[in-house]
Image 1 (cartoon, rainbow, N blue to C red):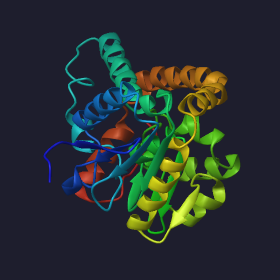
Image 2 (cartoon, one colour):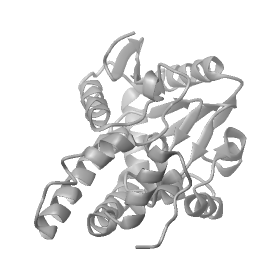
Image 3 (tube, rainbow, N blue to C red):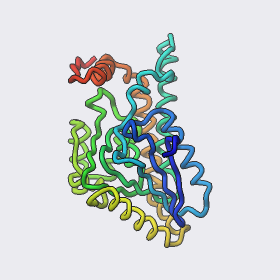
Image 4 (cartoon, rainbow, N blue to C red):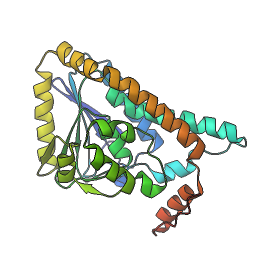
Length: 271
């Protein structure tokens, strides 16, 4: 197995990007985000790739943000001025938003193929994709409220345009787990497969079908569909980055991270 955090390959006119941090269940650290962006940038420059699949080398798509990385990030600590700290945090959030958002802005359609855990940051990634196929064992969660965080990498901005709105609100407020079948009923998932292998074959078949069409027409269709929506989402992403630059570093967040490492239920105070 490669030591790269992101692995890419090409099958005919279909690009494949795989998350490759199996030992951590693809917990997303800073390096993984930036490697993902670099991989997508290379694919953007390949005119022979007409469709892209985002998937994983292991059972779990992603358990979300790596809390160790979040807790020790130099982008959120080490500033004596509150204004400097807030500015630094805002810039850090915007960098991570760009790493996720490139999946939405790339001109070719992107299909997410998921199994196992797909929570928090993992859900941010697939919400930036055009289509989603999941194995029936997939567990989803907009997990951030359970971690005293306002999700800021795109799920709150994109999911309302993808799935049933009232169901989205329920899942965003509670942070609870939900199944692939519930995700399908809510409109988040296009197809549910028996297992990962079946999900991957469905994703590859769909990608090849899309790639068999006129690349110019498919890319133009995506551009027209998302032209106005992209502007709205970008505005809302900037808003949440500003919000979290002001409010992210709370006592509740410290308690959530501490409780996670101590393997206990957090006791939030709302401060």
